[in-house]
Amino acid sequence: MKALRPFGTTIFTEMTALAKAHKAINLSQGFPDFDGPEEIKKRAAEAIMNGPNQYIPSMGIDALRQAVSRKMKRFYGLDVNPQDEVTVTAGATEGVCATFWGLVEPGDEVILLDPAYDAYGPVAALTGAKVRHVSLKGHEFGLPRKELAEAFGPKTKAIVINTPQNPCCKVFSREDLSFIGILCKKHDAYVISDEVYEHIVYDGRKHETLLSIAHLRHRALVISSTAKTFSMTGWKVGYVIAAPELSRAVRMSHQFITFCGQSALQKAMAFAIDFPDSYYEALLADYTRRRDWLCDALKDIGFRVFTPEGTYYVLADIRPLGFADDLTFCRMLPREAGVAAIPCSSFWKDRRQGRELVRFCFCKRDETLQAAVTRLKRWLG
Ligand SMILES: Cc1ncc(COP(=O)(O)O)c(C=O)c1O
Image (cartoon, rainbow, N blue to C red):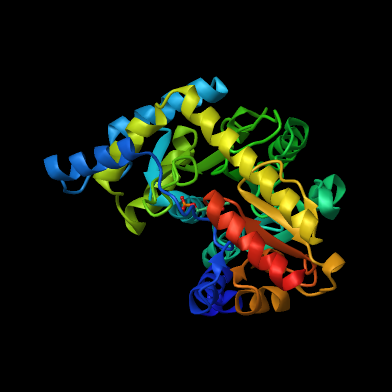
């Protein structure tokens, strides 16, 4: 299809295939090499055995929408009506599709902040919208307020925010998000906010959901997922939270994409979301430990490392090691070192940007990370 031609195959597919071909340790695509808690699996297995196993309501089972509503109160103090403000989707990925296709018309403009997670561009292109790319600034990935204000105009339908941000691992501050709220109000625009890493935020920072920002309670469509929080990326249980009129738009398209998700997995995730605080604290403590270990190890090898504020990725500058081009480096890495990573220029519209950066993920067992570092040391050392 013409609209999709510029995007080719996703970089995640390419790098995971290279990792497989060379039996490399895959620190490219962001999936854990361990599963989430056994109790969640048991719940899903019981739900399958006990049934029913037929279509469920398109918007998702009541228990999961209730759990999402409780979660929004518990973590953010927000009242979300499970009946008309929560729509369960097949992962955040379908949440992004359903949101775009329910909201955005041909001829509208959508703003993306580069580097951007790779699904947004193609999904926006399929709506017929014009995409305006605004690059975050420098290696701090600061919000360029002037350029952003200039990118908004009469045709702007929405801006996509991803916080914590993949790939740059930034957690946007309340001040930055408030600035976006003001722009959206001024231009009568919406925010499509991807918050799948909401529980992986380091060093005492706080995740701010866009629904809690002034002017955005009725303008934000927040997309999240159980994939990262419960280490079950293959289950694809996500959801969109938005005011009733916006949820109606999401549900209109969702009914024709998947109609509904998987009942047993939704039941199990309804149970998981209500886990006590100790679960969420342990998840964060665990990722903090892995983050610190991998950052130190990569520094030790000679990369320049940017300590992540959130997510389970880390960006590393390859120039101190004598390399200049991320794509060449990442295509060589599985074969030469036996490790796979993601070249970051693929997250920019203008691929001349980010060529000095590669992304490693650390949602892996300690022994996997240790083996990857040993291999990198052997090759680069
Ligand atoms: C920013 C972001 N959004 C969405 C997704 C996909 O989430 P899901 O597996 O729930 O579709 C990912 C997965 O890596 C991601 O990094």
